[in-house]
Amino acid sequence: MNFEEFCQCVETCDTPEKSWADALQSLFWERKGEWEKAHEQVLGKKIPEAAWVHGYLHRKEGDLGNAEFWYTRAGQKAPRGDFAEEWEEITKTLLERYF
Image 1 (cartoon, rainbow, N blue to C red):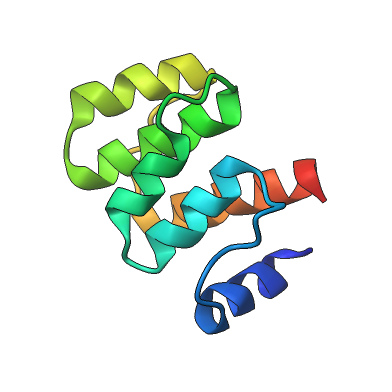
Image 2: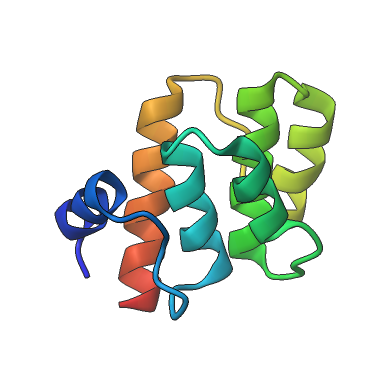
């Protein structure tokens, strides 16, 4: 699956594919405006990809201290820029890893 196909699914699908990694399912829910579902999808997951998305979610929420914790766990530097650009970067990176 490529980025365009993922975005198309976000627009047309009611739920993410169950076969997708938790981090990608979380990004799907976040883009749909379902922050709580997105957060639940990565909560308690111990892999760096989930921690990266978790950091993004808390940064977008405005909880910068919590976001910094999760970015550190993911081995990522907390960005300060545009949320849409960060969502795209994370999504493209994860799609390359998983597909």
